[in-house]
Image (cartoon, rainbow, N blue to C red; front, side, top):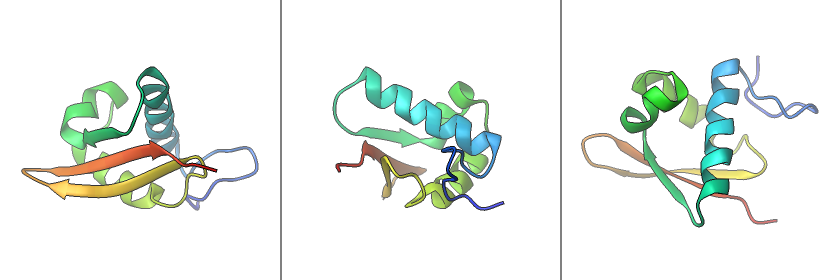
Length: 86
């Protein structure tokens, strides 16, 4: 199954959907960009850091309302997630 958005707004897998929902909720709770490392959010989304890393690569450019970017690497990849401006 493709990781691109379908008309119903679903993404590739339930795991990907869970991760996208987590990011949307976190962005709604705070203002500004979200910086995450898979190992720090793994328990929150019930995924392993390795699964999160693989999903992040797949979700880059595939979620219409989120911008997902590999930001830096210091002991683990840091990802920047932000709301995509229209």
